[in-house]
Length: 118
Picture 1 (tube, rainbow, N blue to C red):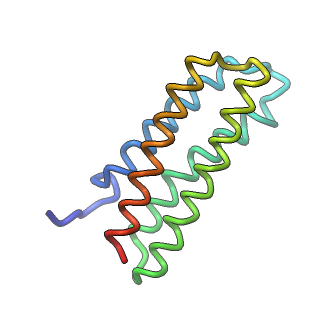
Picture 2: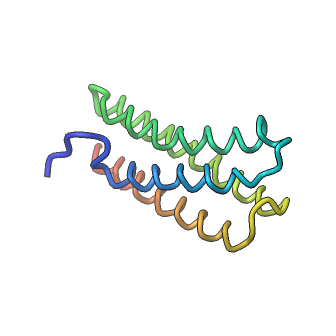
């Protein structure tokens, strides 16, 4: 099957789902975190999906893979921020587990997508 748009990439679909969840959970963060952890987590989550989309449109495989790798980096940042959020009691352990599991799935999908591109 030929993929015609980034929206058809399963890794992007799951990354987009992750963005929506991160926005939802950070709504409950303290207001003094708005320009700190809340903003950072949202930017990381958006960066994951955005880099997949940008990489899809790049002209060379190596350029595309570069963006997919940046997506993986943003995902790792977000995983730490989720851990921090749990440890400072901004999110429950259950929420952390659920979102971290989705993040793990996104990571596997991005990694698989990269392998297909090489």
